[in-house]
Length: 367
Image (cartoon, rainbow, N blue to C red):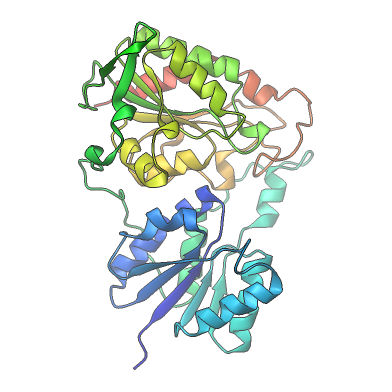
């Protein structure tokens, strides 16, 4: 009898791929006799490499080897040799739809995600807005497997054991901080991440789109207030591209308690290890919220143009930790990529640093 083998397709983005992890883990645990292969981009490998014995990962370079229709046909031929018995399209974009079509023509059992676009359009409508909570991405993913005959009971806590990832695997410079802003003098951070007097706090101050980014000047005030309240805290910065990294480097130089972690760590695997030891993460509605969620770290999430009702809140994150303003125009975008209809991004700019710090203190004060 042919071994049951599910192909799971989800190419991007990082946060969306990360959100598949709790569902795929639960699927693998509930159906240990079923092989599961995740097809995604190379960045996603750390999510799945050691997730479960029956989960494998397959990389697809869609900008190189598998570019265009010719490349997708080559990818399909490679996939067809794997003898899959079911295809789960968790992306439902042109590329995955083309592969799905090829599998359908070959009489494979195929199912794809329902993104509930109609409900989301009503959520972001400029008039006649309907503030109705949409199904989460986790539920949407689980529904695909149910269509294939594999109903899933979600059962996931963290990628790591309760004690977190192995800090000894991280570069030592992550734990070195300047003393009195003197670059020639440094000390090593106490690696007891659970010391209440020296809380480890993560901060991911950027996102892919302006509608999801809290103003940099106001975020620096958050940093200053946290340091004032917790002089011995350690604030690890995550994320940042070419334009954002100089900001993070400047904060690291200005504040001895701040470390630009992403500038010193070697990719997502290292970031997940460090995140697993944080008391909490402060993040936009971004991929870093989902990374922290995968290691069971509480997240104080900041929402502007987007809204948790669209279904993208991090795994097991409390809505009480979300920072957002009630405004008639919110949300105006599902992904935060639309121009502000007011032109001033008040949904972000009017959030006070004190409100964010208050949420952080609420988390730090919990046992």
